[in-house]
Image: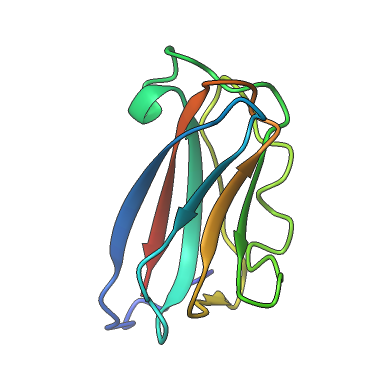
Amino acid sequence: MLFKKDDDRKISSFSEAWLSDASGDATISLADYKGYEIIAVQTVPGENGDLATDLPSADYNVTLIDAYGMDWFYEEGLKRSGTVAEGFCKEGMIPFSDSTTLTIADAGNAKQGLVNIWIA
């Protein structure tokens, strides 16, 4: 269980739509959320997450890389479905580092998707 019933932290979310380049990759520099913790992540294939348009290849990868090359999703974002929305969360939550980059790899040329991230 991630939250106790009396947990009074404010939970917010944001979404990042992506479009891969000819190499099948996309890179998005995220705003500074240092001090927040990631509590859940959802990957949704398709244009703005529509599950139908320009679907990425099966087993595409989503990572959250810091300035030192560490994946703050701890490999939970690897091998994502190209047709179904998938989510993950970690017991204990993930601290949000500064200077993070959301990266998409192996999605195929001109493919799209959405990454939803919940933070507290």
